[in-house]
Amino acid sequence: MSATAPLRVACLGAGYFSRFHFDAWARIQEVTLIGAADHNLDAAAATGLPAFRDLKAMLDAATPDILDIILPPPSHAEAIRTAIDKGVKTIICQKPFCRDLTEATEIADAADAAGVTLIIHENFRFMPWYRAIKQSIDDGRIGRVLQATFRLRPGDGQGQHAYLDRQPYFRTMPELLIRETGVHWIDTFRYLFGNPTSVYADLRQINPVLAGEDAGFVLFDHPDGIRTLFDGNRLLDHSADNQRRTMGEALVEGTQGTLSVMGDGSVQHRTFGEQNLTTILPADRWDGFGGDCVRALQDHVVSGLLHGTEFANTAKDYLNVIAVRDAIYRSAKAGQKMRV
Image (tube, rainbow, N blue to C red; front, side):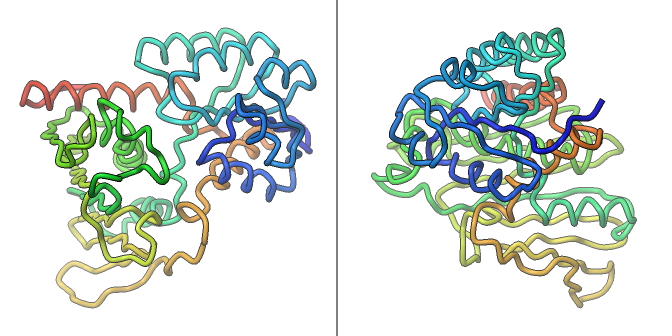
């Protein structure tokens, strides 16, 4: 049975990235924001919503239809268990979902047992350029897909002060490039080409102020003989007015042509054997994050609750992303291809 509008939404977490969540929720007509909780009460109050210091206090005041958890992975399990105990039936949790595969599996099972819909906020697959590529592939525009490459080039990782101004915790993460950032393309590649069956990774650390890796190559095998390459280097940039819009450039190659994601968010198509490029998605003009993908994901959840449309990125499904991530690190350590 579908829910009815307006859906009551409460948010846990008021840190750096939460601004995009709050802004997107405020622009969805079928939603009413009812509270924000954060251990920093001033940060919660700055949202303009009823502010709470912790989740229990917020859920004691009102039970939301949706709880949006905007916290780092070490806080996910406790927050989700608390929400389940308090009767919340729909939870969105920021990626990469819990501390490890064991904990993520336990929490996904607990949500299922309680009849709770648990969605992981992995928003890159909702970026308009990847939606355009997916539609073009499904329409047969480039024939049989053989391979794809994404070159991550955010240009934000150089020097002694890297990340201090925005996300300083990056500096102390023992696993950075893949755990924090590369997971976006693990999920995007599987959205476009199916779940990877094996991976080979060569990772390295370039900036010595970091604890974890900041560059590397990951080769994925997908069903039907498709191979993809994630070529990541956080120190280097790409041609874009906003390095964080697409964070790099993509090329998808098929037997009848290619699709390219440019730094401005446009998607270009070239027919096999020709030189001319056709724009199938114009340059992105959204001033916020990632082509408004945060709102696109939230709209997706709202549609599922109000109209019964199928949910993507359920916690059970997202366990595949965590398994692939772990296989990447095993591969890099062993120096050999790993089956997922």
